Amino acid sequence: MDSIKGSVAVLISGGVDSAAVVHLLCEAGLKPDLHYIKIGMDGEDSSCSAEEDIELSEATARKYGLKLEVTDLQKEYWEEVVGYAIERVKMGLTPNPDVMCNRLIKFGAFEEKVGHHYDYVATGHYATNVWRDGKMWLGTAKDPVKDQTDFLAQLNYAQLSHTLFPIGHLMKEEVRQIALDAKLPSARRKDSQGICFLGKINYNDFLRRFMGEQEGKIIDIETNKVIGTHRGYWFHTIGQRKGLGLSGGPWFVVKKNVRKNIIFVANGWDTQLQYGHDFRLADFHFITENPFQAGFTPSPSLAGRGEDSSCHGESNYSLPLGEGWGGSGGLSGPFPIQFKVRHVDHFMPGTISLDDEGYHIHSDAPIQGIAPGQFGCIYDAEATVCYGSGEIGIYKNS
Image (cartoon, rainbow, N blue to C red; front, side):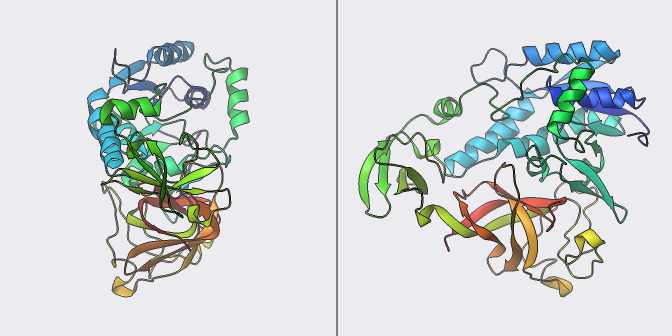
């Protein structure tokens, strides 16, 4: 951080990670401005409670003599992120609002309103900035359990190149110790859990408010017999085990019929109906550039992958089918990768290729509960750089 020159804004949340970012930047001789993004709805049951967050953020600002501003993005958040989540749920998909919150709010609406006035915006995400061949890539965190690159994989190059991740090179326990040693106000605060846009609100209560309830059948997919009822397909996701209210389990949701409001389940821990090796991604989004296209000369750690098509400054770089891979000498693969399909504490090895139906991910090991609508996040074979992500579409058992 000693090489950072210019003005810096810190997105502070009231938690220990963003407070540690403030401390580290000040230790490096910088004087950042602090910004708390308000996305809750005051007085609403579905709102995120911001009072304690702001108090802790103010205490951190006072400790270092810094300016704190509260940026109200409630309208943008509820229109963009909550709207996206409800739309996906209605379609029977499994949304990831945290991914869209980062892309559209923390690195989108905030950038448009405030962030563009600064040379850099620093956050407490567990990720790193990696420079290779004159370009910035989204690097994974030192702590694989806390790595948050899957939440950031829909950023574009302009957003990434404007962002700093000062704690990505640290383990979580190191960050906590830094906060304790510095006597930061949030040093002993527990890590936040749950979904970004809900805060402390129960997810099913949120869905019930916006979607209501409608009784439907639960069908054993192997016998085609009705074995129970549910209160709406929107309360259930592929791979779900808890909350079904069925005896003789374990039971897992393996399929949904949205039009008829039916969920299909399979019985047993070892049922192959809940596992698969393959899935497809729609509109894959490359953050920096497509490393699988012919003509790109990769650095040693990107060996075996290639391209020279950048998306610098573009708002979104989604490679349509056939472009880059098959066009102008592009390659179809398969290429070795590692990937995530949800926010987990490990990476999975596999391959990526392009065929007539889209981007095909094959996992070396069977995967449980791949749900359409989730994001598949793709990394290099060493899981050091995140290339981007795409929304999971067709899932086939194999």
